[in-house]
Structure formats: C-alpha cells, structure tokens
Length: 154
Image (tube, rainbow, N blue to C red; front, side, top):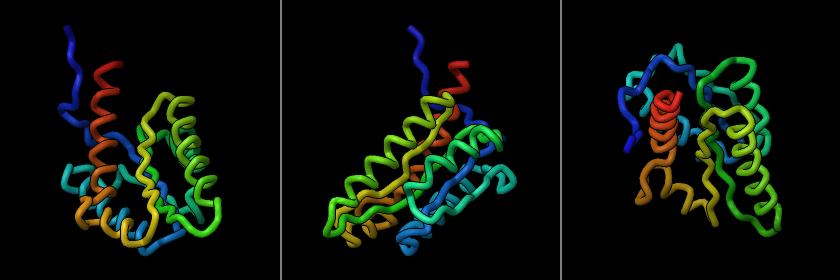
C-alpha cells in the first residue's frame, strides 16, 4: 500500500493569491495571516504574486489567469461574504465556490478556497485570529500541502 501525504514542501513553487477588496477590513487580515504563514514556511516573497479584485465573484477568473498565463503552481483565493438582507449572498457564495472548483479541475492545479462565508461580521472576525483560528494561515498551509501531494503524484 502506498500512502501519500505532505512532506518536503517545495518552497520554490510560484503561488498566486487573489484577494477580494470587498469587506477589506476582513480580507486584509486574511492576506496578512496568509503571507505571515508563507513566510514562516520559508516561501520567498519573489515566489508570491498578490492580485486584488473588486469582489470575490471576480476571483475565479483571476485565479485561472494566474495559473495559465503566469504559470503559478497554486492559487489561494481570499475573500469574505457576509449574509445580508437579500438572496445575493447565496448567489455570490455559489458562484465563487463553483468557479474556484472549476478552475482547479480544468487546470489540474490547486485552487485553495480561503473565502469566509459568514452570517455576520462577528463570525468573520472570529476567523481572522479569534476563537476559530486564522483562515488566511490555514489557506497557506493547505496550498503548501496540496503542492506537496500533487508533486508526489506526478
């Protein structure tokens, strides 16, 4: 039996990060945590490209461009969608999650879904260093683990 799990993470793989400007008080913290964790994992700043988009719906398109045109090995998508008074929340969440998955499957490369989908701002804040950890840091760990596993399957 062969078991494959993360090991010997290659720090030379180029990583893209797509960050939504909408709800920037949250997404800026997601990015900060993500970059801090990549730094701790000794990923060189030269290997990281950060791209800002107006809203999270635009993120899958930019994730695809980073993978295809800029030859990134993985892309982390960071955003925050907070439920409002209309059904717009449901459409946004569905579009971005389906879009990220489609890009990953179409290009056979990791697209990490680091998008918070919360009922309120308090829940979002709990996920950027509060009682629910830091989802930006978690996204960095997920990207690096996926790169390791994918490399071993090659």
